[in-house]
Image 1 (tube, rainbow, N blue to C red):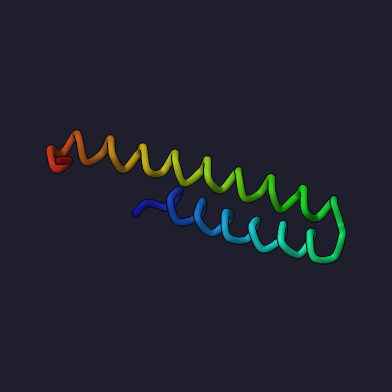
Image 2 (cartoon, rainbow, N blue to C red; image 1 turned 60 degrees about the horizontal axis):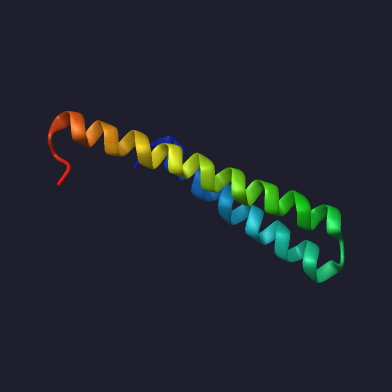
Length: 63
């Protein structure tokens, strides 16, 4: 795993928690911020996944 994969998944989890708190407290601002953070984390993790796949392909270890 590379740092983008790790940080992305952490941001995804933090965003999901923030989104849930926003829903539970009836705070649409917090809910929106959580949703944005969650989706940004998904993108960051996907970038990390792509980097890892490319690295493995170059090394010849990808199946």
